[in-house]
Length: 192
Length: 192
DNA sequence: GACGTAGCCTAGCAACGCTAGAACTTCTAG
DNA sequence: CTAGAAGTTCTAGCGTTGCTAGGCTACGTC
Image 1 (cartoon, rainbow over the protein chains, first blue to last red):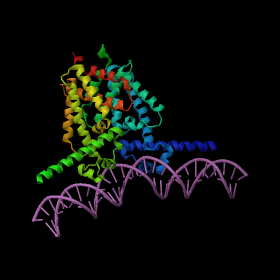
Image 2: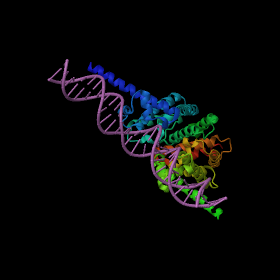
Image 3: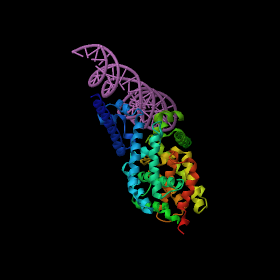
Image 4: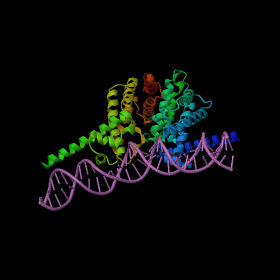
């Protein structure tokens, strides 16, 4: 009985934790992280502010980090799925589109993934592992078997396109052209 | 006499405006925009908060926009100077280095230039003009005489490298390699 | 010398992230 | 069945933020 109760307790905690993260992600993607307040978050899950801190002692920063971590998993999976067994330009284009789609669909999650506050004092190893996985997909896409510089630049380009598109600094309708341009420049076959 | 007085008045206003922007830029580059508060800003210039709003009715957002505008002018000038009469890879590398240097030396100014709050309800035309000038330098650097897609991608790559370097998501010491990689991929001569 | 205007400050609002400590519920032990 | 321990939630409040209403002071003008 005690076991059963303890199980249920843990399940309820997990459930509530998920609800907090879902609420934060949803509201952030809708109106930006500045509109995500601890008060509103607490109200959404039907509890008061201090309850949030029992789940995330680090407060809002730690919530953002948790959302970011989920985001890395999601983004990596999407890119991996888009890549499949493709090679060459088709591989690059597919991964680029998947990457940019994610950035557009979840602007706030993406922001949490790359904005500075992440590098707080919290979890370090998880983040590194997930980052590594994402890096590897991009390396596979462009066929980078070197020491990673090409992947770094490719990643930077995707990152830059994502942010400039969002900021409206780049023509929205020319997205396909940008993807094609990117694929042409990073295709391995241009060397041979 | 009235003319003289009015002149002096305007000069004092301009002077104070400059001091506000300088204080904001300096503190932001030192500790991020979150450390730039209207109270501290007011204290720095030796006045109280409401005075800031007589110069920038839009408050902190408008101050950030003003800093961003100055930043665009500065960045464009630097890139133009770095470009000089160079052509090909050397031109691209020079401009890339100038761009990345600016982003590293003035992280907060750069952030203000590309972060969303900028697109507020304030000045629109100034921003567009300065953006255009910056875009043109990059187009000249890579020799883009097409419809601008290549420049958009080049710009995105520089933007991405700037941010990923700052966020520590990319190996700091490999910067020269990234610049070289970038130059190789965007050099016009790869077409012929 | 009274008046209008401009500039500046005092004081305060609502909202923010976050926390101490009271109040309540649930489990455990005698 | 009861008394205490343990855990959970809430009330209330601190300090800080961006921003603003309204009063005070000093100036130029009739």
